[in-house]
Image (cartoon, rainbow, N blue to C red):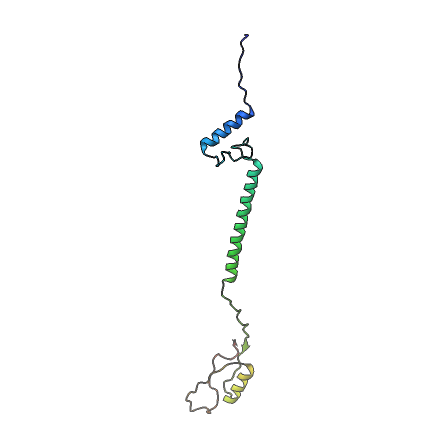
Amino acid sequence: MGETRQHPVITKDMLDKAYQSNERINGNTNNTGDTGSTNGTNAGYEDPQEVSRRRVLRYLLASILVIFVLSSVFMFVQYAQPNVQPEATLQYILVPDIVGQSQDEAIRLLKVLGIDYDIEYVTDETNAADIVLDQSPMPNLKSG
């Protein structure tokens, strides 16, 4: 029972040397032989605040990129379409009955109503020469 046991004691200097030798083995030293930390005591250790800051920066940059892409797509869809003018509002009017009227009366009535017309002449020996015999569209229909 009187036996003395030795316990290992690890000091800060020992840990620093172990980190430095591990960094040299992994090839992570710079030209000065420094392991990249400011005093050599934190070799191989990443500050949690620095890691968190880098993560936030990555998320921020990714968010900006997503917003840029979405706004570009919106702008393309919005402004790449041809400039289409809305169609004029159609006005419907009731077609008058001009069958049996003289050609002059029918033309005057159609002009007053703003209706375009074409005249076709047919040969008919039973009616007077200037009387309207037929019309299209039929009377009392809405036309635009």
